[in-house]
Image 1 (cartoon, rainbow, N blue to C red):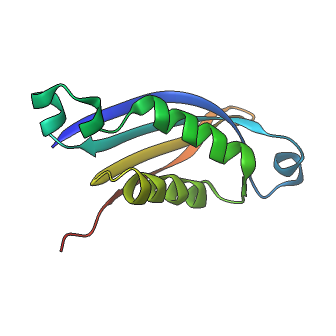
Image 2 (cartoon, rainbow, N blue to C red; image 1 turned 30 degrees about the horizontal axis):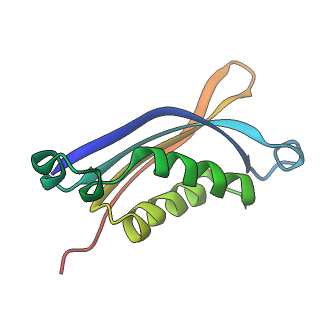
Image 3 (cartoon, rainbow, N blue to C red; image 1 turned 45 degrees about the horizontal axis):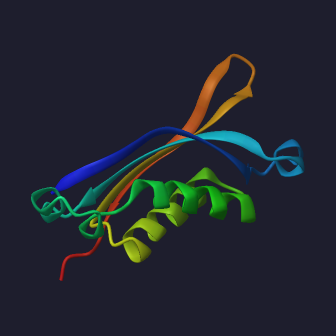
Amino acid sequence: MDFIFIEDLRVEAHVGIYGREKAAPQTLEVSLTFGVPDEAALDDDIAKTIDYAVVIERIRRELAARHFNLLETLGEYIIALMLDEFGAPWVKISIAKIGIMKGVRRVGVQIERSRPTV
């Protein structure tokens, strides 16, 4: 299996349980690695892989339209998109809030999931 990665994608999102987090969007850093079919590289055919530009646009659009209380829920939502809609067999995501607390650079979660094998 080959992998595509997107590192430190900055997105504006409504996420959090505190009033200040619900009042305005905040910047998140999202890093994503996902499996793609090996045949894409062999055939040099974008139609046989997952287009990272489409993934990035979809994540930006989804996060602009929704509020999540927890980063964990947001992460599971993106993973479900990747597994179910984009057809990735395996996904790892890291999501971090930047500068959310004094003296803390980033607070976040990492989640890894794969499509169930039949």
